[in-house]
Amino acid sequence: MESKLIVIFIVLILIPISILGYVTHRNFNNSLQSNTIAYVMEVSDEMVQRLDEYIKDMEQLSTIPAYVTEIKDNLELSNRYYEEQLRGRDESAKPAAPFSKVTPTSVDIRQRIESSINFLNNIKEETTSVYLFDKYGNAYYRYKNGYRTDIATRYEDWKKAVQDQKGLPALIATEEVVSNTKGRSYVFSVVREVFNDAYQSIGLIVVDANMSTIERFVNRLDKVTRGKTYILDRKNTVFYDSEHAYIARPMPESAWLSKAAGQQGSFVADVDGVQSLVVFVTSARMQWRMIMTVPLHELTKDVQRNQKLTFFPALITMGLALTASIFLAFAVTRSLRKLINLMKVVQQGKLEVRYPVTVDDEIGRLGNQFNRMLERIQELIHENVRIGERKREAELDALQSQINPHFIYNTLESIRMTAEYNDDEEVADMTEILGKLLRYSISMGREFVSLEEELEHVENYMKLQNYRYPGQFHLVIEPCGPFRDLRLLKLVLQPIVENAVFHGKDSAKSIMELRISFEVTGEELRITIRDNGVGMTEEALRMLRTSLNAPPSEKPERNKRGIGLRNVNERLKLYYGNHCGLEVDSQPGEGAEVRVKVKIG
Image (cartoon, rainbow, N blue to C red; front, side, top):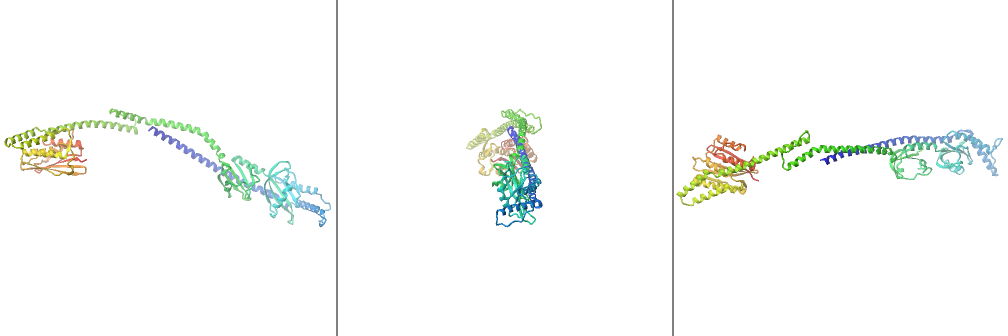
């Protein structure tokens, strides 16, 4: 019981705490993940909008030359100048329209155009440099944060990028450049053709935008999420990434990258061997994707740290609870242990012990039942002693009733008279029968005999009576069938027959008939002894029934008619139970009927 209680307490303490901890941890992680997704999604939307606006500003900046007459005139001046230079080398070419009265030099043209570039450079702080090209590829720029050293080699690529744009800007993906200050940086470019009023191409404008604004915003975001950010264009070329690992290069194909499709969403995937939360948003204008990956271990780092901080207090609390449960289990089972010790004392035969009941709880009630059980056992022991004494008294009464001096005297007197008048074998027969009766009655070593032996004893008894009273008695025994070997208490039927012979003989009738019959009811055998004697009055029958049904402890006055029947009835109840015994019915002048009920099994 103590072990079971301790196990129950442990289960009731550990399982709820474990489940509570698991549910709390899971809910907190889910809540943290949901909040992180919502925050990152909101920030990503804002950042994508800024990116769209940033690129839109660069594109708008590239449209300014189309609206500034000075820039267009200076580019056309450059075109005419270099066209004249080319004609001067080619003698077969037609002469061009003459310049103004004062022919400008290349230095004059460069100063004019670069002064306009200085104006363009200062419109947006995010621009690295603005480059203007005439239609012959001559570059004009003004130093701002340095200028790129690959202008001459990149011109043809820029020119091809805008050939099919029909005046729309072309966006050149991020590329690493080297400036004249020997520094390396990442820029993206907006390229657009410059047209005159006649919508003729007169040159190109290239706006290089640096990544400082995007980098500052991404760094702040990565510092909060402790993750990585990727910005990819429509061709999956990396516009920008936090670690500059793939910038200006195509993003390698991967399972998690293929799942980042659609306008926006989130999922958990393995990113470079680390379980991460992936959140992606697609820009509405450029259809570029911003993808953020947040390692789950970084996301739950604070949760795990808090769990470690609360682990030891929880462990101490559980230890105290388990200790208290053990003491409680011992306290609850203390009364049971005391009761068990008393039971061991009872097993040694000491029935005088009693459990001291102090509390009216379940154990107290069990103790009360234990005390009542002991009292009942003592009562049953005393009852068994009384039953044994009653059995011995009944056996003595049976012996005394059978060895009746008056019966022996009358029988011997009959033998004497017969021997006096008839010197023949009757004397020997009567003496033999008397011997059998005496031997059967006093054979105290056996309490049970077969039904056949009991019936034979009745027949011997009636033979003696017929010797004494010739022709006055007729005994009829109906067939008992399969019950001839039934074990029956000894000296049951003969006392009943004897009672009928001595108390039921009707002098008005020449022959008294006695009939013994058998009937089976359930598990009981009913033996009926009927006679056609004088019978009994109602008062005599009532007194006889009262004597038979009286408790064994009572000693009613013994009369000659009821002593034998009462003795038989008590013995039957002692051996077969209270539901067995004798039942008597009688009518005056019609004889009597005695029914004997015994168990078959």
